[in-house]
Image (cartoon, rainbow, N blue to C red; front, top):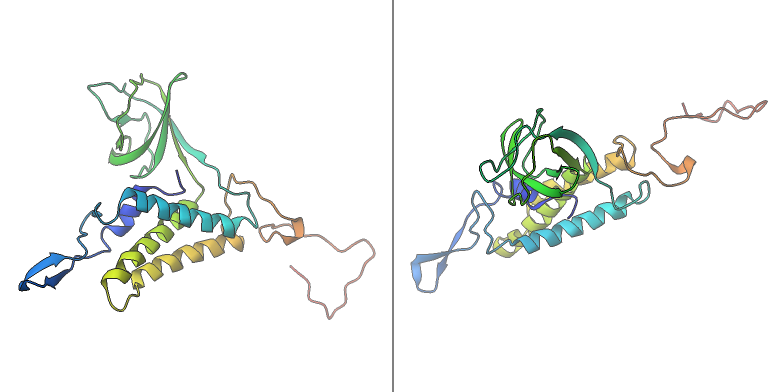
Length: 241
């Protein structure tokens, strides 16, 4: 399990890639598909194993860059909790929560009833309080079972998915197009780098994560200290406000 999911990658990639054909040796009228990608990823070209490997590469880059300020790898946080409004059984495969939340496909939820616990990825959001999962729910959870959404602090998931998508896009773009430079991949990578820089310079704080590093080397601190008692500072020396 990485910082982003396969669903996140598919949502970014699917509408970006186009289809192309090339003439075969049999004649100009006979063509075959070079990049058969439309509304969904072609699993023959981009398998789930490939996507997983690129997510792991993107996550390792994030950990390396943020390890100066935060303990890595990052930790998941619970950012929404509700209870089941209706029981889950053979007649009702959907999760219906007692209160609404801005859920999206790719989010991770945990179902708990005090004894059994299952972890699932959201596949489709029916409305603000009802959704389905990618995998079938094995246990018949009763009414009032806990529904907890967990995620990594923003923008970790955002960065991971766009870095992985950019690398995947470049992989197939370079093999099927000339010149082998992907503008879309570069844009995704630039967006991810900008968010990383926002974390490093303290504009974005990763809440719930353990900070490390020496106090005066941490750029995310907002407090300041006065000069020692009786000390003076030269007029020619710039002070930090």
